[in-house]
Image (cartoon, rainbow, N blue to C red; front, side, top):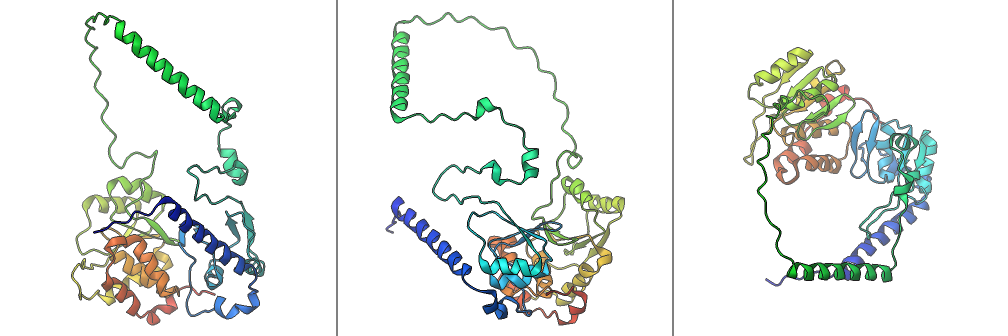
Length: 361
């Protein structure tokens, strides 16, 4: 039962060791020629996305620093540009990859801040579009004065003296005469709140919403508040993975916007050793991969397990390596991740569907 609390110096040492490891890895990357790594970088059997890779919007992606084994995956994205936010020079190996594939590098050197409590991101490091959108600050408000320690101490002493003098005055001062105040006027009734889902000023995506690929989205079950957001996606289809009937309000929304519903009733499996229906996942993948059904939304109840299995099988069809498939599954399932789901994705055979998937590399 002995609990050891790590002191602050040891915490700083651990962070310094992490910084040193990251710096040493970056230095090693600078001296690895691309010619020595072609076998690793262009393995066409599987695609390895960079760390924390995800789709932000059509043609916009985000990730950690790409390594050599991520080059084949990056090549499949047909990138035109890379926005690099670190101040360190781009490694020579990565530069060779960019030049070979005609990718332009835009670097904005923003320092990583691990030891300070306040980050100072210079406006000069932001793209010009962001600078135009930001309001011009008042020059009078931009004057920052740093007070020396002596002036800080003097100001604190003055404040303490004022507090003490005020306290002494209160000891000898007679309490003021209290006069009853007139009652406040009655407040007018507030207008009724707007109906849920009808406010077009802001959009509310469904639970666990994310973009899977161009024209393919995933989420939890859409509610009425999410309908204005779904209208912006211009959906043609919805792939619904639950066996329960679709709610009447959601069905009316689909009919109003000309969205077709594809339902594949897969039971929610909480018990171990219960098989996931392979045939329904396969049929759902055929609907997802048909361009005539896109843009489409895949959803179940929470957007975690059934949706995660279907997206994981799609990733295998896109030649993602298994570890990256599991990383994406865990990002949505988190503590609710199930071994049965991961085993199903690992054993799922995509050979009969390869003719439907777009080619990579």
